[in-house]
Structures are given as C-alpha cells and as structure tokens.
Length: 360
Image (cartoon, rainbow, N blue to C red; front, side, top):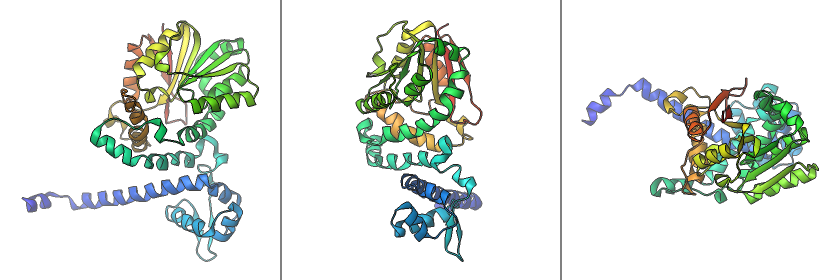
C-alpha cells in the first residue's frame, strides 16, 4: 500500500512544493527582521547613507555592529539590501526605501511587519485555543494599540481628509457647515482628531472600550487644542443613542467586535434618517476560494486567526474575523436595518473596501 501511494506522487510537484515551503520559511524570517529594521531605524539610516560598511552603518544608527552585521546578512540574502563584496559595503536602493522607511508614509510595509512578532508572542495561547476553544484577550497584546496607531496614523494623514471622506457625496460640505459625528472603535483617536481639526464647526466623538487608547486620544486632542473632539470608554455593542448622529464611521473596527451584529444594529439606531455610516474594512471575499489571488490573503487570515477572531472569542463573541468578506458584510448590514449599501474602492488601495451605508 505504501509503495502504491509513493508511486502515485508527482515528484516534480513535490519538489516544487518543497521549494515553496523553503521560500515561506525564508520570507517569514525576513519579515521578523524587517520589523527589527523598522524599530531600530536601520532602514531609515541606510536610506540616508551612501554604500557603507557595517561599522559605518552601526555607528550612524547608534547600534551594536555585530547585530547590525548579522541583520544585514538577512537583508542581503533576502534581496532587500544590496552588497558589494569587494568593498564590504551595503546599500538600500531608493526603489526599496520607498516601501521600508518612515518617509514612505502609508507605503512603509516594514511597519506592518511588526504584526508578525506581536502575533508570535501569543502563539502558545493560540495553540491552546485550538485544543480547548475560547480566545486570547486584548491584554495579551500589550503593544497592539501602539502598532495600530502607527499603522493607521500614516494612512489617515495621507488619505482620510483628501481621499476617504470625499467618497461620500456632499459629505465635505456638510462637515464644513457642522454636523454630529461619532467614530466606533476609535482606538487612539487619530482619525477623530484629524477630522476635528479639519472641520471645526462639526462635533466629533470617539468610542472605544480600551481605557489606554482613549487616554491617548484625549492627550492628542488636548495637545492640539481641539474643543470639538471628545472621547469615551464605551462598549459599542450597547449603544443607547437614537437618531442622533449625521455621520458614523468605523475604520477597520467592526470585524474585531465580540457582537458585531449588535454593534451594527446600534449604529443603525443611532444614525439620523438622512445620515451616513462610513465603514472601512478589509476588501476580501467571504469565500476563501475567491481569495486565492488576494495579494496578502495568507497574512490577513493569520492576523485574523491570531488577533481579530481570537479577541472576539475571548469575550464569548462571534469571532467574525478580519476576512469576513464583502458578502457577509452586506448581509449583516442589511440585517441591521440598512437599506442602501454602496461599496467603493480607492485606486492603489488593495486592502480596503469603503462601505457607504444609509438607512433609506
């Protein structure tokens, strides 16, 4: 029986798969070191230097040369940093720097690489959840809000006022005149504060269940002297407002909720009849088979399994997950009482769907 099975194996297919797995291991290791390159400022340092030795790079970055040299070994063999063997120098091509440095803004993928070690920290907890069920609580992700604030902050700075809000017809004019706005799951509040500064006649509120995140949001608002922005620690699944807000926003927040259906129903109640719910969430299909060509589907499913889904399950929630997909989103929005759902995309943004949702 064993011999028959062996003879049925396509050796070329097996060999190709082994190569694919080695490639996966290499890229996983490179992702960890990308995170280190971002956190230590090594990518920023390299982008500002001509071709330099490891000693020169370490001196400029204020880091240990031995560690920098080993890190450079990863970067060179991963084809991220270029190496001149004759002169023992290293350089970061500008084409690569445009995706790895802080100057790259929202295009800085090294920021996103920080999620890999964050998820690795909870691997043992996740393994236990596979065996026993349940989830891993937010408290096990001590750097989550810091990383997410960094990831979303640069995106909001680059796109929120100029690209995202104008997707809703007439919204900029209404914001300039003055309306009531609430952001659901506001995190560290940067989006709320950006809007409050841009539209001083409107009134903005941010809700989040994290005391840490809300305190951070309040500090930023106070530092900027924003009197039209306020923040509350609140479970958004228990919204008690009715017909109160002209605009409700949720930026990459609904799929994390323990009770997303209740959250969406509460949003529908809290929205004025002529109001708009702007929901930004992951662009994907609810059918895994339709995500085969998604550029970062494995990454997003991993983030979902090891964070988005599990923090919901830790609260005895639905465990919706980041890859809930457009079909499921439309279904849940309809069930929540919304009559109109329009989905827009922004050129160059493969990651997000922009749902423009109304009660009528």
